[in-house]
Structures are given as structure tokens and as C-alpha cells.
Length: 245
Image (cartoon, rainbow, N blue to C red):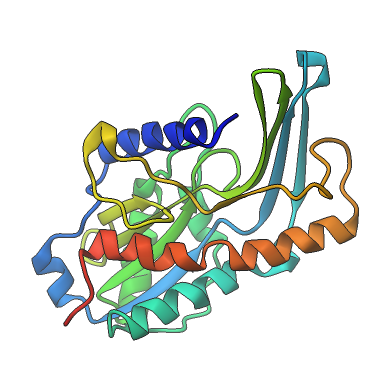
């Protein structure tokens, strides 16, 4: 699969998401938000799919990865951007992401169900005295995954993070803005808005199919720490329009 086909898939995701929640926060909401916290639910499972020449060659691998600590790493990375670029007070709550994972959904509706955590959001905000809560939730069966294919017309292999970041209002518990995690500062132009998620081509030393060794998984973990670092700024700049002057 060529890169433009991968990006085309991201386009359709963005269009679908835009129907449910605004992608940019209202200016008056941004101005009143001073104290926030960050929660990630994407970092507990690593999925791999492989499409062979025929359906009999397809593979699906699922590996629980809570020991990788990616949720805490992503929370820390986002918090740093919010503090330094947006001058917000970010509370290090150490919140357990498990209760927030109710937002994550799988096939057939792969978009986060933000309504499932409205009450939890309001309670968390009250307990921590927050103005808003940022939650990173997975899009699709897994937020962190490898997609590979050996089909003659769709040969590809990518490691990617499919997730949506929402800025949740503490009064209503609903999204003030929700945006697909993106690499690149792209403007919203409906069908012409092509959003590339944090992704990389698989190295030749990483198998497209079959079992992975612990060493390959450890290399993947290192890449997943690095992969979204640009995306935090690109995504937040889109949602919040621009940092204060």
C-alpha cells in the first residue's frame, strides 16, 4: 500500500470524527482553562495484523503491554507541551487509566465513546479542581498497532498510533474539542484534510508475519516512545488554534 492510500484512510477517519465532536475548542473556553490534567488509555495493548496472498495467510497477534508504561510516558510528553507551549498548570494526578478505558470501542464503531466517561470526567475534575481534562483514547481495535500486507497490489508494513485526543469540559464532561492525533500542522478542509497519524515504515529486520522475538518488541517500544513526540504539538496547536503570544 502506498503512503497516499494510508493517508486516504486517515482522511475518512477525520471526516467521520468531525460529525461527532468539534475539532477546535471555542476561544472563550480556551481562555478560561488554566488548570488541567492528562490521561492516556492507548498504551495497554499492541496489535499486529498481516494480510497474505489469500485469506488463509492472514494473521492477527495481540500482546498486552502494560509493563511498557506507554500511558505514563505519553501523559508526561503531552503535559510538557501543555506547560511550556500553552502555559497551563498541569496536575500530575497519577490517575488510573483503567476507569477511563470505557471510552475505547472496537468494531463496528471504532471511534471513542466520550459519553461513557462524562460522569467520571466531572468527578475527576471536581476532585482535582480542574478546568479541563485531556484524554487520549484509541481509534480502532488497538491504538498501538502494526499493519502489514503482502498482497500483490497492497504491499506495506507500518507501525502507527491511531488515537483521538479530546479536551473535555469539566462542567459537562463532554468534548470541547476532539482531534485525531496527527503529524503535521494541517488545516481542516473537510474532505481535503489529509491527516497522517504518528507512523513509520517497518524496518527490514522486523518480520511482517509470524511471531516476534522479545528483542523486536523492545525495539518497537523504543520507537513508540519517540513516534508521537511531534504529534502532541501538531495536534494541540490545531485544537487550541495557537499558543498564547
